[in-house]
Image (cartoon, rainbow, N blue to C red; front, side):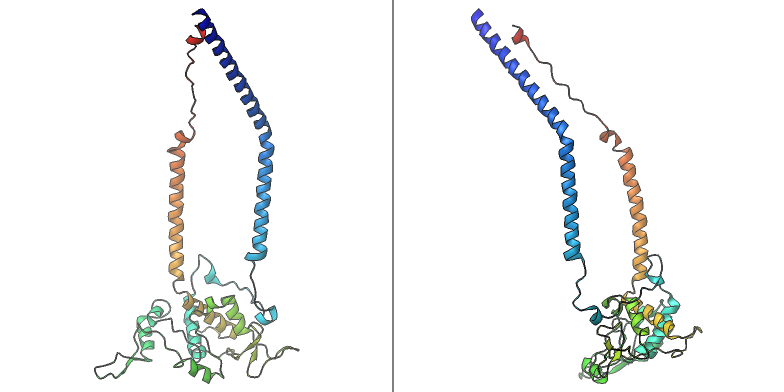
Length: 322
C-alpha cells in the first residue's frame, strides 16, 4: 500500500510539474507575442492602406474617368456653368419664367419641335389656370374612337390629351428640314450632356460669322457648342422677337433663359414634389437617428460597459496531499 501511494504521489507530482512548465511557456510566448504585436499591426495596417490607395488610383485611372468617343473639336465647346436657381436643392422653378418660356416655345420652337410627353393637364397649377389650359387644348383636334362604321372623326382637345407634334411623322419632319429630324424637346435637358447650360449656350452661341479657319458644310450653321460645330438649325432668337405679357424685355438671352427653364420643367415636372419628399425624408431620418442615439446611450449603456470576471473553481488537492 505504501509503495502504491508513493508511486501515485510521484506521478501526480510529475504531472503537476509538467502543468507548471507548460503554463510558464505559454505565458512567456503570449508576452512575447504581445510585445511584438504592435509592429505587426502597424505593418498590416500600412499594407492595407497602401493597397486601398492603389486600388482607388487604378479604378480612377481606368474606370472612373469619362471615356470620350470624339475629340474635343468634334464634341463641341464645353458649355459655361450658369447659376440656375431651380437647380438648388432648396429652390423651385420660377413659374413666371415657365410661362414666358412656354410662350417662346409656342411662337418660336413649336413649328419644328414637339413636346409630346407633356399633357395639357400638367400646365394647370404650374403657370396656367384650368380655363386657359382648356382653351389651349381646344385649339387642336384629335382623333376619336372608330364608330360603328369604322370612321374616325375629329374632336376638340381635352386636358387629358398630349400636345401634338408639328409633323405627322418623322419622314414629313425630315422632308421639311432638308433631311434633318428635329428632336422632341420633352426630355432634351436630360438627354444632352451639360443640361441647361448646354441648351442655353447652344441657343446663344451663334456667331455673326464663322471664325477664321472653320469649315461649315453647305446647309449647316456654325455653332461651337454643337458636336461637329455644324448644326442644321439656324439662329432662332433675336431681340424683341416675342412680346411678353408681364412686360419683361424680350432680349435673346432672356428668351433663351426662359425657354431653357421651361424645357427643364418638361424634363422633370415632378421636381418640386421630389424636393418636398426629400425634406420630409431628412426630417424623419434626423428624428430616427436622434432616437437611436438615445436608445444606444441609455438602454445599452449598462450592457456595453459591464465587466465579466471569471472565477475559476478551487482545485481539490486532497488526492495530492494524501
